[in-house]
Amino acid sequence: MKLNLLCGSSWGWTVLASDTQFNKPLTCNVRISDNIDRRTVKTMVSPNASALVSTTKTKEFPIDPADLITGVGRALSVIEAFNDEYGRMTVTQVSERTGIPRTAARRYLLNLCHFGYADTDNKFFWLTPRILRLGQGYLDGARLPRLVQPFIQRLAMSSGETVNVSVLDGHELVYVARSNSPRVVSIGFYAGARVPAHVVGAGPAILSTLSDENLKKWLSEHEFAIFNTSAVLTTKKFEKVVISARKTNYCISVGNLDQGLTGVAVPLRDRHGECKAALSMTLQSSIWSEQQITEKLLPLIVETAQVLRAVI
Image (cartoon, rainbow, N blue to C red; front, side, top):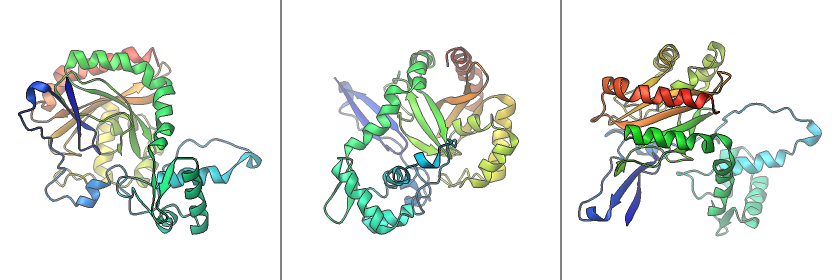
């Protein structure tokens, strides 16, 4: 029998303990930095938690104005307004975070309650587990996660480390696939986790495939929130990281999220050369040096990415 514990779910750390270890305390380092502002830590999924809802931009889809239903977009923005810091909100708070007039925000919230996606005590509103159906539908039905799963599982078994596949959604990375852990203790991100693109290696790996013009635009709009005071990233520093990843076709990120973590990632391209995602690992810096990663893990990751190129 095994016990699954999620430690520091914002980061997606997973500790797996067998029944032979119940007498030993299970711990995991969920400290980002001794001096980090705790509010920033709590809102890692969205650095702009105190501002309006994220203005993440996706590909524009042309639509006839007669077909446009503005209410659909507003209802989705109400859902996106909730996060780990704002798990329960009043109508006024939702209105402020979405920019939707208070009266309209109230109606959207009440409709979400009516259809089972939210609940209320007549003052505060919160999302219900039914909301997971919206995201789970992508994970279950999307082609990419299903295609990569057997390949990242094989890579995990050969490397002994957990493997992830993530995609860029505006200024955040969304992890869409994760291998089963070959270790008793594993560090990585669960499928569905969202993190700012600048704090993990997968971000620069994907961004390195952008044109200079699109990269400059992305950098100018991104907020470089700090999660580790010993690894402060500015626009110029991060741009150098991306340019380096463009030349080497991989990125090793050390300590941007936590000083004890190192990430390695490569772009995941399709047969036409277009970047679709990133293939990555999150490792313990105390175990893996940059040289060891380059010599032992990187060849395995690159080989898997090349095999997947013919598949995706």
